[in-house]
Amino acid sequence: MATELAVETERNLIGGQWVPAASGKTFENRSPADGNDLVGVFPESDRRDVDAAVAAAKKAFPAWRDMPAPRRGEILYAAGEILKRDKEKLARLMTREMGKVLAETRGDVQEAIDMAFLAAGEGRRLFGFTTPSELSNKFAMCIRQPVGVCAFVTPWNFPMAIPAWKGMAALIAGNTVVIKPATDTPASVVALARVFEEAGLPAGAWNVVMGSGGAVGDPLVSHPDVKVVSFTGSTEVGRRISVACAPTFKRVHLEMGGKNAILVMDDADVELAVEGALWGAFGTTGQRCTASSRLLVQRKVYDGFVMKLVEGAKALRVGNGLEAGVDVGPCVSERQRESVAKYIEIGKQEGAKLLCGGEKLSAGDLSRGWFLSPAVFADADAKMRIACEEIFGPVTTVVPIDSLDEGIRIANSVPYGLSGSIYTQDVNKAFKAMREFETGLFYVNSSTIGAEVHLPFGGMKDTGNGHREAGIAGLDVFTEWKSIYVDFSGKLQRAQIDTYESAD
Image (cartoon, rainbow, N blue to C red; front, side):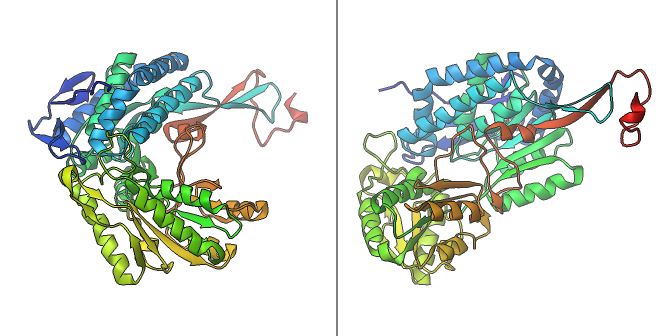
């Protein structure tokens, strides 16, 4: 068994120094799978700590910006190698902290590794472009430049991957960062900060301030020296952040909720579709913005699909994610389990058929955690709350449909637009759905989860505000375009006025 990564009493990272909160207060972080497992004690920070961290990031910015981008890339590459070396320890820490099974937390760390290497490569690219000028003896080009101090507010469900998506892109572009991790998962972000330290990231380039959204998040996103705010979380909080940033015209990047649909056509490989639905609905205990929470199934295969889905859901083993053979871990907190349990009751009251799951599990060791059995609702109406609202737990809802057009219409009927999927053997159906789904991600004969870091990640409508993470597109949030003109004609030339003939 791998050695656990010890986390006991931690501090904020400000300007390269690990310091306690100005308040002197702390909070405990306990495993959602076992309340007896104290993961760590963390600083309960406030505006004073935010001010100090932003000042440190602002001070570090000029030197980090001016460091050659290939050298910045070498530091991120070193961070990727450290993440590879410590992958198992980091995964075990993450499973203790937020509950998802080891196979998934290893994947979370792997995303951080992949993003480190992707961003490191951009240190030798960071492509702008050159273009012909409309005038003779004049050169025109466009380059990327960093924006400045970036504020990150990150969620608990991917506590290393999402900070890495944001952080690697911001850092390679030459920005500095202040991050407020979710209070449910501060240890994973502390661990990432220690990776950056070991890799040689300069003091002040990456700062960590821990505490609540009100005490830390609010003053961070509204701080006048913060130039970019990048947030992943609920649509409700994202809307508040957007309003808070509007008066100072900060650049804002929002990744928010999802209510993602899988369409299962009557020509689909039903076994494959069920496998994808189970993984999409119950991976990470359903606590993904990309979770497959709506299954729109054509009537010809509906009964067979539902039967196999229920069989599969009942076969999933719920337990501590550190144990071998466990498929589904706990909800991240008692609060989250209660929220999901309320939706289970709402679904029953709405008239959907609960075919399995939805029970709080408390036998044996499960009594020490926030466990809930995977729930499948069937025969639901597309307008029911359980079919429209994000539940963020191990619950999926099956809705019968008559046609591809009806499926697409229902899929697009919710406010969210993150991910979608279709199972079909008909290329024409696949391409129609691919075109007409109002989502930023789309899969054919695969689940709604499984994004890769070299492609853009993000959604439409109430899921996001148009920006993307990961891939080269992730750089757009953290860079400004600068157009540059070099006139070597030796005389005044006037664009849009001088013609090519008169410019000689």
